Image (cartoon, rainbow over all chains, first blue to last red; front, side, top):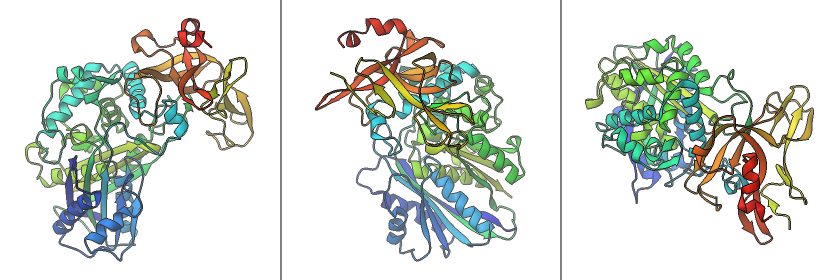
Length: 377
Length: 145
């Protein structure tokens, strides 16, 4: 079977860009990716976005005079960009297309994310504040895994330190644990700096069919998307009620298991990972869900520096969402851009030396969870 | 005057001031759910019976929301959490009358109360909340009602 290879990536920095439209940001990212890929003919395009409105992907490609092919906007919450990549990789492997453009765009309002997912009564009742759900999850993680508030601050310190060297990040200043804990409490135990900022940005990836890999080929070894199983009251599905969820496999684990199987790899093979750090506790939960950490080992692993740059397996070398911010539809593809730079050895001050296997993870609304594995041959 | 429930299909406020959450029970799966659906959220089965859920339970998780989220006009800060309902194995997302997280502990006994979250032309709009049983008696808002 043929394989899907990444032949170009492009990014518009993540941050706040007053006066710049989401279409313009998309144009910047897509054009950069197309240039890297050698300006190929595109057979299809998938655009991840949640807040950009009708036919948003068409507007970007229309501005670039690159239309005529099928263009499909894909919404899968925080996993939108990864869902778009999954569709592209699957279509390429199946022989439907030779070259597919995948991009993600977003321009989000400031503050607590407002989502049409919640009915108006749920907002009026105060039951639609996303950080409050994150806080409950953080509290349970602290209770069940021995994670401490200092551990949560340490995650922020790690990711913000990583973000210093990332020109595409929103926050590029290192912070101390004391500063994190001095930021205001949004929802106990989560302080403001432990939460990522919704923001703006775009990212693009060109994927092309290859009959075989040659040295340097960056292969999409797995691109998996899963959704939640019923039961958990804490997951990103945010139901109104749930049951004992101790035996219910979370969607991130379902996606990871499928991705490892598809790639013929395991967690120990991963050299570098980008994972969903919507809040500091979310990253520590992701370590466990992805098999990068034994349940309860989060504190020790943090202290060991294993997931810091320079450690055994850096996680979120880009600075993660805590440093970059989260433009929903673009965030997963921002991870791909980072990991492709890592695999090519082009990540500058945040380079993970000799990285050959990279894993990207997102999870969000709808309990859409994605795990993508990229491998450099 | 009876306050208006924020969503009467989910949460009934009766003329005597008592209140109850309305859920479903699926005989074939043996599971309760909330809100009431036509199909069991765990198996898809349709043998659903409308039930009034337990008005007591124990505290499973909690926090306080310190900034008004979009679409919310009620008081801030307010308590938010999960209460596991007595005898039904159901964990329900809920407001909590206690907005100070340090005043709560895991497993605290909780009881269902009404809480004002806004007003319309006809008067107060109320949501459900859970409170510690003793707090229900001393809450000045509730004493007026």
